[in-house]
Image (cartoon, rainbow, N blue to C red):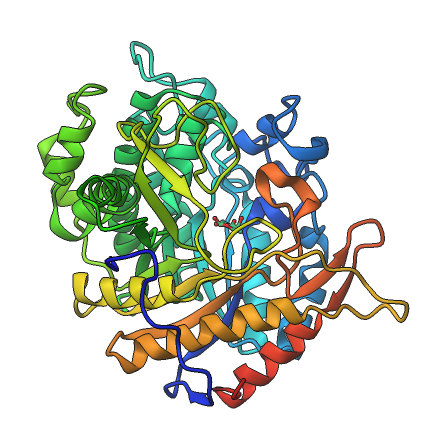
Length: 487
Ligand code: FCB
């Protein structure tokens, strides 16, 4: 990680050519766009339940209809083709395919994804499947093997086994036509926002449960990757999408460097330790020893988790700036919803600060140097493993003008700066193979409901119309030319 809050020098503005074959894509996730929540045998996920719990999601919004993509996917794929996208990352809804998270698959659910993939391939758009983007079947959260004290969901070991079974089902159904597979999206969010701060589903606030969840997500990745390898043709590429944090200390004072180390352990090395090195970092175990003895980790798990990766997906939005808290009891800024419960078990003495830079509508600072730092860091930590930016983008207050056009110059500036960062990392030697803009469409932004618009395409949720914003046209030109204009 970079040594100070100022990070690397800003990426150069100028024309930048990307390597031949670089993939230009966009990303979405099932619960955020599909809708059709009660159709064709789909059952509830933890997000359906969370949305119905008063006070959890802004405005009481739900993913019941979202972008109605389940019914409009052919039009949406046509739009992707018009924008010249070469790849599309989407997630499969586990409760659509295996409603209770156990037992036989629902054919209609699988048929939907086969039809989507066929539509993509017929337009020469390469699919990248994510098996788990946060929509755990509610049944796995609620009912779990008797005698378990973990309380269901990801803190429960059995959930990792269930995930592997589900991975095998999806691989059998789509393996003949999908080449790029990722097991989990951002396991940090599932573990620490879902079970630590409780701002994401299922909304539990228990530090032990959060750490158990992190391990079982790692195990689910390993078991899931094994299941995928067992079912997929040898050419298939298997990876995972992480949201590593570019953590910067506020100053070089030893206590701020220690705050950086702690958050780096909880945000990053808790995943890359077992994934890349086959072990949890000793400092993480020490920092959290008052909370748990980690006896839920069985020695044999670590070899399973350290499954060779064909690629690593990196999701990046903004860096984190940390220091030692002058008053550990004071309210925290951690880049997520203010909450009485911390998503950082064992790091109560750490304060979070706003990173320098303009803010997006999420109040996230625009700072592409964090992306350069992460890409160069991961290129050296995982030598020989190709990297993809599997999410990057920004929310702004987009509104159609009188003619119905949506101008979003802020987003163009954001994308330009971050693509320049990717280019700079490639020049520095990082093997980055593609970029997926988050997101194709405005969509359901989790606890923020529909209040935040991340799309390159504007969605009118009442009329269900799509209007490409000026950033979509800009991105289409970049993708067509394989080159970033000077700017
Ligand atoms: C990421 C999520 C994605 C979206 C963006 C803004 O953490 O993976 O679903 O919400 O943030």
